[in-house]
Amino acid sequence: MPSKLVLIPTYNEKENIENIIRAVFRLAGEFHILVIDDGSPDGTAGIVHRLMSEFPNSLFILEREGKLGLGTAYIAGFRWALARGYDYIFEMDADFSHNPEDLPRLYNACNDEGADVAIGSRYISGVNVVNWPIGRVLMSYFASKYVRLITGLKIADTTAGFKCYRRQVLETIELDKIRFKGYAFQIEMKFTAYKCGFTLKEVPIIFINRRLGTSKMSGGIFGEAFSGVFKMKISSFSRKYPQKKA
Figure 1 (tube, rainbow, N blue to C red):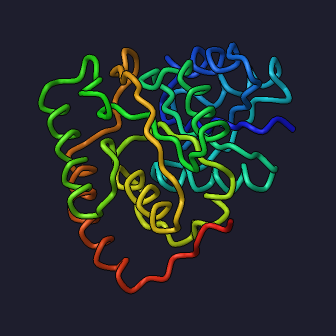
Figure 2 (spheres, rainbow, N blue to C red; figure 1 turned 120 degrees about the vertical axis):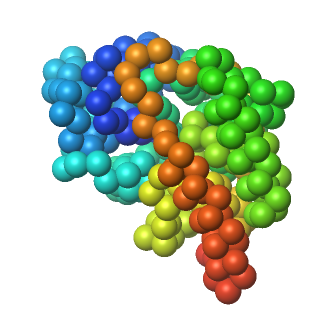
């Protein structure tokens, strides 16, 4: 069983899903893919099923009924990966805002450079975002600043969603205690890994706004992050986190 699994949550991504799958499979190093589809009415799952006959041992799908949230999609994907023995589990968007060619760099940060969580960072070397409206760039950038201030995380891009986890991180984190379902899920996972004693490393990437399909981002998602992060920090004072084993 190859050790690397890329999780790609989808909702109405028919314009992107085949291209992103083929782009990952063109990479050296034999990555597997699990698509977690939340009942896309546009036929995204059907495209994946067609491709599964072409890639029968490396492409998989987990179909869920309706939009249940990004966080729950990834948690389901984490559990699926752990049950099947994968050593490195990646999070990646379907819309090419995350460049598949950066996957080996995230893997190397964990496998060769000692990171437990590798984070594809838009802000570690300036602001590397292409084709976003300036308002959204500023909102994302200052959201990360706010999260750093509240949580104490020494990470420039606290809201990043392009990541690689070592298996041990997901085994140690109490996944059933992860509360956020939207944008703040990414923050909560990083904060929890940090509190469990794991090493987080940022890898500079260039984030390119989607060219096809519709963004799932909304103002309410940012609102969850701002109010939720403060509550998360307060509750952390009384919570005992399981610690990384040597």
